[in-house]
Image (cartoon, rainbow, N blue to C red; front, side, top):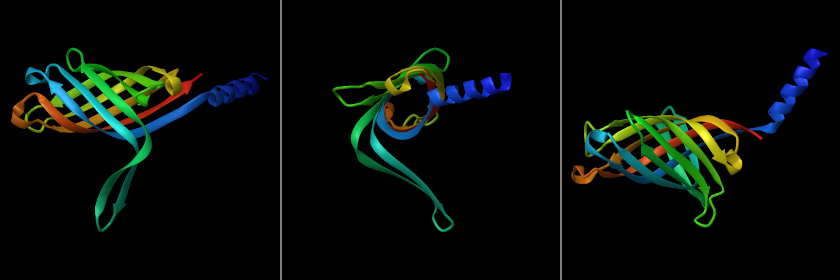
Length: 167
């Protein structure tokens, strides 16, 4: 009897949770301080369809097609000793009902200050709308172009998220 109850409870728990995964290409702006000790990133991504294809002749190809619809905003601000906090919000300029807050560790490489790049790993700390009750992880990688080593660069980055909610 106990095992039947356990199976029923596990079934109900899985029925109440929703798996959420997505990957998006963002375009934005990175501002960083001396030696990358502080930084702020603000980026935007349209609704999109990302396709990766592999062939023996051409190798790998990656294509992003913009779709009609809402957009996503990614905002990240550095903390101390390589940490950061931020959020991804989804919607329109009038309504941003879905968001996930993230926190984690970041590596910012300024060995070539004209073309800095970064990578970050984070976990979801909370969410609203579709992301209410979220648990999950995200990765962000990107490269920038910073003319005249100004500390401000235009960036392309990829944000990938995998998680689940329990309502």
